[in-house]
Image (cartoon, rainbow, N blue to C red; front, side, top):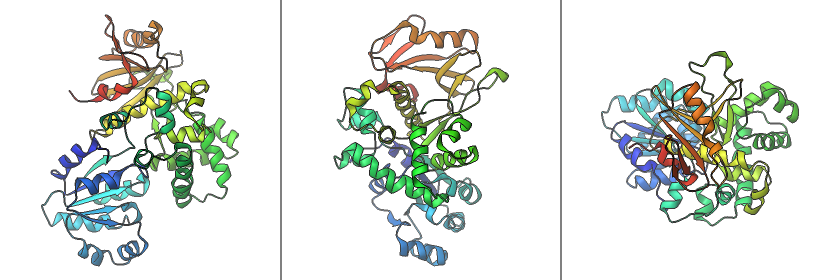
Length: 388
């Protein structure tokens, strides 16, 4: 099993809270992480029909049989259990008593806020990061391979063929979960939406334009996006507009939580096709922003990640906010350095807001410049977000 960086934070929070909740997409490795980290805990899957039925019909009796040091997998299937867990942990001062996993935020967020506020630590686990693969001795020479293979654990554990595996993943989990949450009458229409969304990764979202291309109204587009985001299929990168007024663009961008699924939706059947793909810059940006998100989540921290664009065309691909300090990152898929890569960072720091650190993440060698800007290879993106 490839070790997960989140393990350290999971163990830390088990010593601080009576309950720890691990959220993330299907097949990201949540169950493997908690079961292998906590071999002495009882494991209960709420995906199993008879177990789920018992939990729903008589939650008190169900929890009476599983009362201490238990992993409840896919807790969103029986969210009513949370209010009963609240009473149990309030009567008992022990920490680390329950571990919950879930793959859908909408079904859990309200229940956790209402029942478990202050009683649970919340962690997010995404598929493997480049750093986790590298630590396990798995490394690709080209970022095209990372994009194509993606990061689902089963791709590596079972040596699965990426295009086939992500096709099955899409049909088994994405379509199934979406059908459970919305009245999806036309699967082909939804697949068209997914492919069009993949073609717009890293671009400012235009709900009206996307709705026209798909053939549904903008309200439906927004609903489908919220479901995908809540299911960890995509994530939203918000614009940073604090202190910049009306001239700043306020539409978000969307990225995919696994580049392998993105490649599948773009009909990429082998890594070599990516070299000439017109969307390669957007896909590389997806990869880097995703690595930044994983680095933050793996430390148990909120992302605090943004982008910047104003009406005059000034743009920064990625900003990280820590208090009043901003770190800026430009993302370029090139493996050859060009001084123009850092111009947007210097201009932003001079005329908009002083950056505490400026980086260009690309596919070439690391460089440090006299103006303070650093060029960093994409495989080391996580280091920019790792606590010193």
